[in-house]
Length: 99
Image 1 (cartoon, one colour):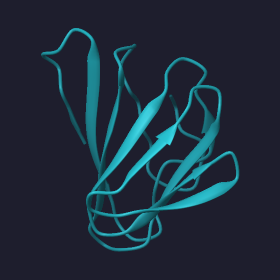
Image 2 (cartoon, helix red, strand yellow; image 1 turned 90 degrees about the horizontal axis):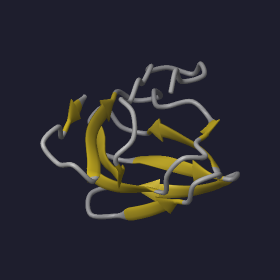
Image 3 (cartoon, rainbow, N blue to C red; image 1 turned 90 degrees about the vertical axis):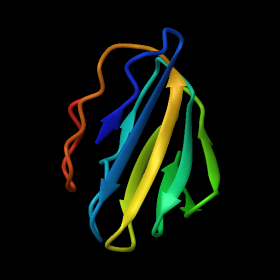
Image 4 (cartoon, helix red, strand yellow; image 1 turned 30 degrees about the vertical axis):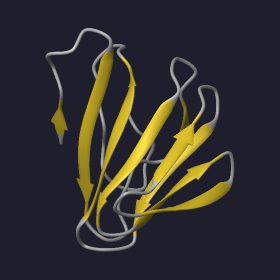
């Protein structure tokens, strides 16, 4: 994972997962999050609706929605961009995230 640390207002994180892995379902009530596909293929689930995510595809998860990601390829990576908040803590796998 890579995190942009220089900006004062925005937070950008580049994450990569192998096939079958991702961020478990959770609700973030703090910020809207924009997912931007970078490589490979996978999905973002927002309030039960699955959205395909691949290079150049954008998916918005408004604050307060239930969301999760899952990789469908060995090289799935995406950026998340949102208003700055506390540090992000991710845990790969099917369990619940720590953030």
